[in-house]
Structure formats: C-alpha cells, structure tokens
Length: 255
Image 1 (cartoon, rainbow, N blue to C red):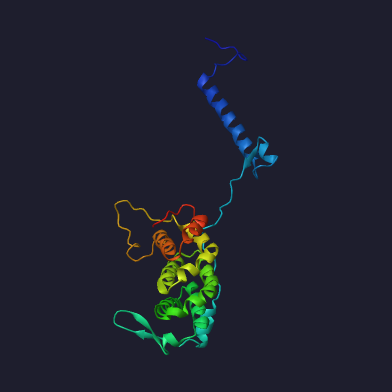
Image 2 (image 1 turned 180 degrees about the vertical axis):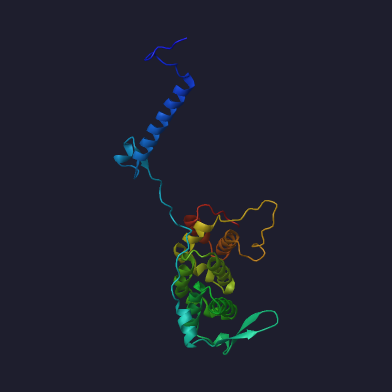
C-alpha cells in the first residue's frame, strides 16, 4: 500500500489534547497569580481583581519588652545596701547588716521593688528576697510607701517577662497581706496594675490528665493572676470588686 505524500497524518488521541489544554490553563493561572499585588485592606486597590489583601499585623500584646538598667543594680554595685549573702545548707539567704525595722522604708523599699525587673544573679536574688524580708518586718511603715511602689510594679509588669511576672505577682500577694489598709490603698492604682494582668489572665497550661509541675513551683502565670485578683478583692474593701470588674470583665467574685 502506497501512502500519498502531503496527505493528512494520523489523528492524535483526545487525551493528549485535554492534557495540553489543562497545561495552558495552569500556566494562565500561574501568570495571574504572579500579577497579584498585595495591598492594605479597606482601600480602592483591595477591590481590584489581581489584588491580595494583607492580614492584620500581630498586636504583640504578650511579646517580651527589653529591660533597662535598674536603679537597684546601680545602688547595689555602689555598695549602698546593708546586705550580704549568707550561705546555708538549704539555700542562700540575705544577711542584713542593720535591723530591718529601723530602715528608712521610704528610701529602701521602692529601690528593692525596682529590682524586681532584674533576672541576673545576684541582683534578682537580693531584690526578691529583700522585698519579702522588708514586707515581713515592715508593719505600719509599709502603708505610707504604697504610692511610691506603683511605678516600679507597673514597670516590672509591662516587661511581659514570664519570670518577672511570676516574681511580681508573688510580691503583690505578700504586699496586700503585709499590713492593714494596704489592700484598700491599692484600689486607686488598679488602672496601672491590672491591664497587664488582664492580658495574661487566661494563660493557663491545660495538660488534661498530665501533671503540670509549674503549679507546684508556683510558676503558672494564669493561676498566680487569679490568686492575686482574689486577694485584691478580699483585702480591697467594698469598692475593690467593682474596680477589678471594670478593668477585667471576665473576673468573677470569689466572695
């Protein structure tokens, strides 16, 4: 059989045609995606066909802030504090070179509260232990100094550092029960203290049937915040709950 030259060749199967058409469509779609431009939301460009609206940026409410040099470190390096390290069998303690009851609380207590922002040894150890020692032996000297403690407390909480948050919350719990009327004296300053607590209030670790060891070490931020708010309500007087509820709407009374 002789095939004539220039005659029509054999026809191609239909499956090859479909695959080529799909490839063309895919290339067209890729070109369209390449032409898409990112733009801000609620603008005229966002209504165009080839525009992609960017999502909102992260708010950074729980992002850790950089810490600045504290006045406590400056005074400690200069040797102005009557303290030293006492090494014991169980752990280290502060050896006070003067009677704690005779110290000037208006001068020393705000400085020790300012040291709550420290995370390095020995500054963190001396500041934390020194605050608890002064609150334990302060008595009537603590109440007049409360207004001077608000700025150091606010600065420590605003760092959003988990370690500093736990340390500051424990100090706040000790401060409320350290002397009479201290809890009521803190009520006017809830607007400076509670905003950060409202952000971290629901930051709990839920392991189901597992064991959360941070609860034993008292390092769970959500649990510490709940305990602190309950102490604020118990020792803050009749207006404490209203002010807490105003700043943290999800809080429920424990009384």
